[in-house]
Image: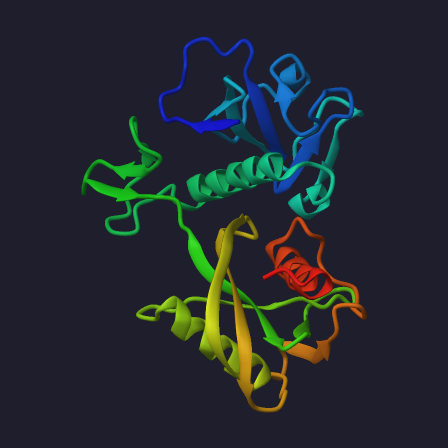
Length: 274
């Protein structure tokens, strides 16, 4: 469905645009896929974007990420602006991944206007997705931050926690960033120990998911409880409990990797599947 590319085509009459007004993504209910705006729809917007990035082809149509000045007028009342969280559940996974890619590329281009080595202005590389510093021949690629996300199980029970920064009372799986010099397994064991005071074993990989908040690559795992009592990390975990598959709190949707981990565990014990 999406084919990445670096060389911008000459013919862009049928191009599609993911347009951000500052950090908010613009949507238009009058187009088929309301966050993928055709060229005819963006003629109402500011003529000069703050930045623009060719991403590749969506269903064989050129696809661009475009950012407008947050202080500028949109020029049309029918546009709606909202953050990427508001797309969850409204579009399929492929469209959400494309919107996340667009946001990450624009943020990377914005944050790397100058070389961190010599301070010179950088420009986009002609053949790679990279910012290039000609004076010191330095290349900066989009930053990806790998994270683990893990569902800890104790037989049929699963450990779910509520982050202290969650605006609502939603429970989810544990997660954390991989530190320099650390393996994925070491990170998982450390994060579980630091966040809830438990030891785990039998770590099993599930799947990965790009998560553009702001630039994570989530690596999903299952792990089995080994020992310990729940002790929540101050200021990070508000509460954590063991839950049965038939008595779950408010949890993330199946679209999120955390929701998929939970759904997989529930399916295993409700159907007897391995």
